[in-house]
Amino acid sequence: MKKKKGSEWIEMKNPLSLLIDIIYPPRCLMCRKFSPYNEISSTSNYLCSDCSADLNPITNPLCTVCGVPFSSPKGENHLCENCIRKKPYYELARAPYLYSGKLKNAIQRFKYNSETHLNTSLGGLLLNFVQKIFHKLNEYIIIPVPLHKRKLRERGYNQSLLLAKSLSRNLDVRLDYLSFTRKRYTLNQAGLRRKERKTNVKNAFSVMDIKAVEDRKILLIDDVFTTGYTLNECARTLKKSGAAEVICITLARTPFD
Image 1 (cartoon, rainbow, N blue to C red):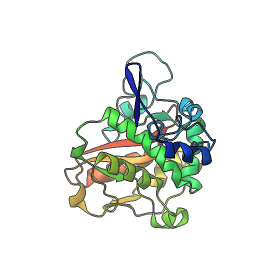
Image 2 (image 1 turned 90 degrees about the vertical axis):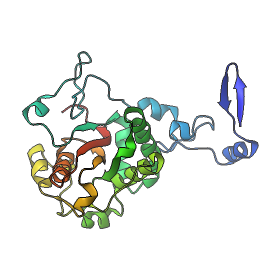
Image 3 (image 1 turned 45 degrees about the vertical axis):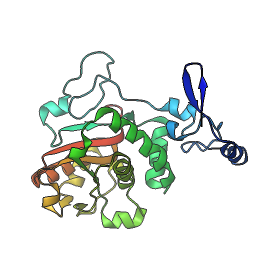
Image 4 (image 1 turned 90 degrees about the horizontal axis):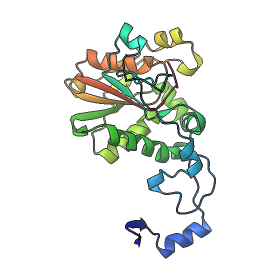
């Protein structure tokens, strides 16, 4: 139900919804604090104003390929040193937010603590970003960074697949999570040094169905971009199997390379 306020229309809840909110006040999915009914909604990705304000958007200038934000707030977008030295196998990598603050905590809970309900908010944030910067998404297929079957049994779910499913459903873009697999068990990247991370994921992935990716444009989905070695190795494997283009999309990335 909508009510006009001045020259604008604002969304109004029906009496039954208001009564439910009084009995069961809405909670921010990120901090779990109770909030006023008109603050927590799908338009706010079910986040309270404090959590929304704590998000740290990535802004220009940044690398035109890997998307790393530069420490200086001035200047034009340009290639970073790493991309100049060796161009990644993917065409583009982008993320809407820095991996910091409450978002960092929420992603860690989502990833390691089985708090899959956070996908409602995190998936919504990622959806808003993809809709904002990409067009003609019907030309792409969505592929999540896969987990090895052993790690999948340990964790019980693939957080990247949950994010990918949310995008696929809301964008009406085909999702393929069977054609691309992690064939070798790898250690957790978060506990490794930079050089160890690169070795850890080397030749760890495989394309099971070459026809599914051949000559296709791919949106490769993961939760966080750190060194980029995992995403780059995924892109290398997909390109080797004939993928026409790989664009990496993550919810967050580390502040500076």
